[in-house]
Image (cartoon, rainbow, N blue to C red):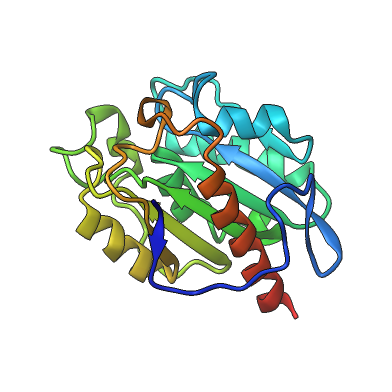
Length: 208
């Protein structure tokens, strides 16, 4: 069961095909981590089941290059008119922290940051991710929510909580569900969709 220390009231349902911020449809950009997200990953399920959701494709998922990955997100954002919500997982969360203040990212209104990989810890993440270190810890310029697991092998929960605090994000405790990926057996991860809906509603309030 997902728990959060903040109570959020929203009229935005997570079954809507397009959510809105100030009456504008919000597009969702999926940012997978190292290795990409396979067919059973909740990110892939969201992408294939929602026309408002698209993936940012990287040329090499197994050998990430920060500069190249940022350029791919820049290009994807530049092709979208209107507000965007980023849906990041694992290494994708560090990517958001690095790119948050780039010019193309001004249309980002929200970021769902799930299971942020601790790229600063050699004991938690593999050498391939070290080019994303040090992870920026400045407050993000858009609404954000970090969803963290109590037993994630790639980030200690206390570290995830600290990242959420530094980024100015709300923290959601997902319980003991591993890396919140396909191996966690979440299926379509309905709880995550509800968290995203609440996040977009909060972003709308910031825009008023």
